[in-house]
Length: 544
Image (cartoon, rainbow, N blue to C red; front, side, top):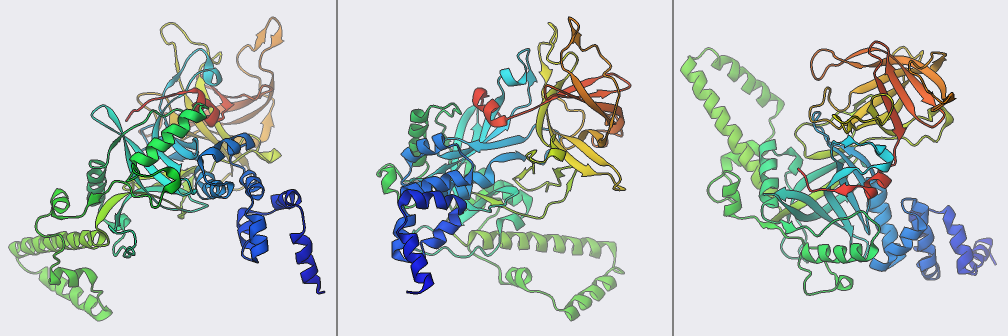
């Protein structure tokens, strides 16, 4: 007998429990590849025990929650599919490009779903951050179907009422860093192959993209079942069933009999075309405009048209005005033609969400964001696994000394969320710790989100003494261990260009960080946060 055949027999003869232990060293994709080898091996790796182990290997849910989620899905294999394709790539901190608003969205696991929770700018009371309750509002949900596939629901508000807008999940990249809300054309018949979109949504002008989104959400709104992050699995399972049945043509079937997720959509017709600001038959395309929209100029034609435009400059002012009008009219027709190309790929349009990985530049951990995209951007918050990056991660805190002390005239203090990252100085000689602000809990922020609240030289500790008394009955309350000098944010040249003044970061034995501005003696006290735990204790509100 060949050695390969002998090894195969040994592998197939292993007890299921032993093979399950071995599978802990494999990824879900490795297990799927094993199932392609032969029928016997496929039957072995398709067992519930193997895929329960794989759900643990993904490391996004504790074992107790994995077992609870199994009650609403066909198998552990289907559950693992949802964890790998949806939950793991999306969980984390996401931000919107608007620098003035508190647009921080934390995506966390719900029950057989992931939920995007916008953290509302707020104040912290006398109980402090850990004992108090965070205010949040839902932005979107992606719910698992019975087979592990994903269904998308956008949350919104219309005339003081809360609504859900069902849509499609187009794609989710495993290393995604941007989440795009788009409109997607679809064909009516399930068996009919969808045509390739001739013109992508992202290349349409901003005004057309905004109109399409408003039109679709204006037609597909559904009442919102109450959403809670508390651990009530019976209510969560009932709510999920309501969502999946209300999001499409589900009223006549059970979840186990689901065939195709078909959320409410808007028909592409002349009425839609009129609402978008155009008249006539939207299927009709002017031949001349089509040629202008699709024809690419050769090099000779490019130079020829350039020479003609130079010669035209000697014409009268009236002629120039007429030429400008012609160009504006041509541009409008090309825009109309591109929108027609986009819509011609389907019979209906519906909401869609797409998570992609794109090349992003960043400054001090804050990504450079596109101003005209309906998008969220993921923050690369590092887990402090290395000893030399022990302060990296998400921190929250308030201003004032002593920490958490409130007065009668001011019962709360603005909550600040900071992302701490490590960098090198410009000349490479110093190692820096940067505290980037991602949320400020005030009605009017002093500086945009993404500004560095402080920058300290983390590689050069000093023996500076904390400027306030830290003793209670002769004993130290916080126990300061070390200090690092640097600079803290201050008034500069307007809203977007802050200045910086000297300050120091003090580290305590209780795990707190305190940055003190030397000139004003202002204290910012920070503590490490677990947003998921805080949001589960908090209160969800449907706010714009």
